[in-house]
Every structure is written in C-alpha cells, then in structure tokens.
Image (cartoon, rainbow, N blue to C red; front, side, top):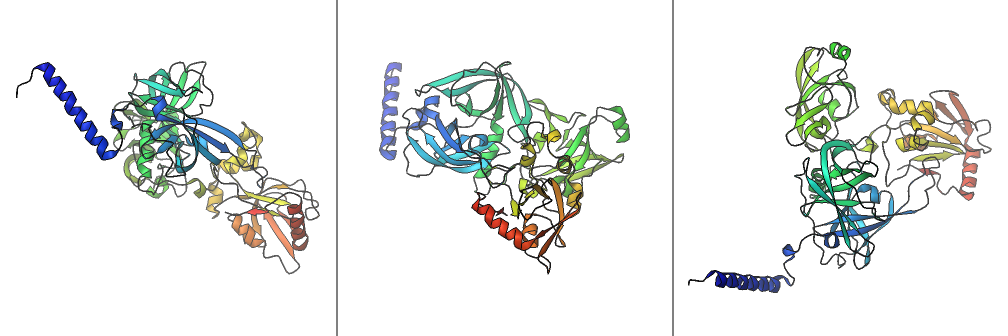
Length: 505
C-alpha cells in the first residue's frame, strides 16, 4: 500500500491514537510519560513542626516551631527535601501545591550529613499525589550549564528562575564537618514566602536542591545530583549505610619548611596527615600522623589537597571518599612515610556520630544525662558547646573545648563518652558545691566512668555509710554526697518541674 506524505501522517496519527486507547484500556490512565514535569506538576509543599532539644537544660525541649518548604516529587509517591527541613520534627505533612489538600507524612529515609530526606504519605492509599509527574535525576551538570530554580506562588502557580553554573566544588551542606559536592551558581532569585527548600532543574530533570543564596552577590550553593543519586541508591535495599568517612586531619603542604620536614621537598603535591581518628577507616588501614598522601584511587593530590576531575576541574580530594566511593569500597593511596613511598589500601567505612567520643551532632534524639541530688551530669557533645553561641570555642568552658579538640587522651583511657558535671542545683544535697560546673568525671565509688550508663550503675553502690564518692580530673578532684538525702531531693525535683531525672539511651 503506497501512501502520499499527507496520508502517511494521518495514518501515523491514527495508529498512535489506537495505541494510546489500548494503553488506557490496559492501565486505566493516560500515558503519564507524555506529561512534562513542571513546578505545578512536580513539586509538593512540605510542612513540618520542629522541636529541638535544650542542651543546657537537658530535661527540656524548646518551643515547637513551624517550617515550610518545597519538595521534589519522585517515583513511588516519595518527596525529596533537605534534611534540614525535617530535623527534630514532631509532625510532617504534605500539601498539594494547587488544591491545598493535606495529608500526614513520614520520613522514609534521611541523612543529615548529606542534608537529604525522603518523605511519603503515612496513608498508603492517599490520592494526594495522583496526577503529579515524578522527576528524574540529571547528574551531568558541569560549569557553564544553565539551571532553573523552581518555586511556587501562594496561589499554586509555578515560578522558574534561571541561574548559571560558575563552578563545581566541595563545601559543607548542613553539618560543619561534612563536606560534599556543590554547584556554585550566579543569578538573581525571586523572593517567595515559605520556600525553605527549593528544587533545581536541568532540562526538566532534578539537578539538585538549593542550599543557600547570597542576595548581595547573587550566588547560590546547590546540593549536587550525584549525591542525591548515591543517597537514593543506598536506600533501595532497606539497609542504609551512608557516606564513608576517612577519619584524618591534614595540612596543606605549601610551606617549604613543612615539605622539608616531611621529606617531600623533592616531590610535587601531597597533603600532610596531622591526626588519625581512632577506629576510623584511615586508622584501620594503618595510616599514621606524619604520613603524606600523594594520590588517592589513581588521582594525584596537589599541595592544596585538590585533584584534577575530568569534568569539574580542580576538586578537593574529599570527593574521592564522600562521593566517588561507597561504604565497603577499597581505595589505594600512595603515601610517603618518613621519606619512603608505600602503598596503603583503605577500606572505607562510615563512623556514626554516636561512635565518637564527642558527638558532632545530635538530631532527633536528646542529650544523655543523669541528675543526682541536684548534680547534673551529661555526656559532652558538640551541640552542648555550641549552646554557648557563635563564638563557642572562646565562650564555652575552656576545659571542655580543649577536650573536644584533643579527644585522644580520653580515648586512650578507654572512655566511650566524656561524662562531666555540667551544673549544680542548690539543694540540701549539694551544699558547698553550688559553684561547681564543667568538670570531667573520672570515677564514682571506685568505678571508672566510661559513659553515662557507668555513672548510673556506680550510683547504685554507695559505701557502707551511704556516701557517694565522686572524683574528677581537675579541681576539686573529689566530692561526697549522701545517698539518702540525694534520693529525697530527686523526688522533690520531680515535683518542682523536672519530669525526667535521667536519659540513658
């Protein structure tokens, strides 16, 4: 059968219509693949109520605060947001951007270090996301690309603003110690209310999540799609591992005297390892303080700690660990140790925050503490130190700041956590001790205190006279409290508003 061009076109259109009807009959819906993603079709408002913990008064929580943002709709009725949006949340709900329909939501995956979270309707039969178009990921962004930042008007209309990628780098997302891949872009963003989280798009696909925007310089930091992809892939099997950590502190080797000291003055590049964290990937592989790392996974490391990425240009070596590799991978490192080259195979692991002597962050869980007769004991955490304000490293108690900076001596003692006396309430049990605070506990009733559970156990064993002996690493070295009086005070504290005398888990 020979058809002219117009007839062929009509025949093709008819055939396409027949196929579409057949697919509708099979699936009961139209072909969603023909729908294009848009702010109105691919975004969902996410409302959260947050309630953070009080680290100075550990039995209390702060007042609830609302937070609202935009999430990217993904396959499986899931919505991607930043972890910062839902941190310490007591309630989360999804809100349809056009109709305003709402439904309770739950967290199905989170990683605060990568600043990512995945939420979904609690009601699996909810229809709130019917008709929405899931976004696919685009991990191909490179410098000079143009991206779109999607927002929503209050009336449900979409807003799209173009920004240009200046460079790809590594930077912190949410946790100071966690550094990941970012896109740095330039372009003026329109101000819209309730837009804590903003998806960023390339050619109709999700390219990242907006982290910050400097209105004066019109510079944005965008959480990169390769990190999102790694996060989603890790969640697939239900056993989330997170991103690996190397566990070293290092110095650049730009100084000529340092290069001579490290025996690399006749070589190019390298970073000088100043500290290796206990039980870290680096420690288990045998890396030592004083080593100079010259290359990782076949990539030469320059004296600033960068390597040459084939698409991004100079990039910090941290991406080779937290981005280009996964937990369980082994990376080969070429190292100079005392002037001699060696090879070290590092199996990458992730050390969870609670596995460190001093927790770097504590989200969705409160501080561990114990109150005995008005003496308030806690495990030292970075959030406790940060409670002293922006300049906590100079305002917080010096001994605790020093312990945070130099945990090795306490780890060598076998401590799992650092228990300290944070403050003293004025009670009949604490007469004469009212001014004590910020002193590290070593022993109670002759028992070494490795964590708060050791402390609770030790307080069940007063001496034959019913006296507890509490020893510290510094002045006043030792104090005594009466068991009977202290327990009576504890009951009074409950009556006067301290609802929980201890939190040990």
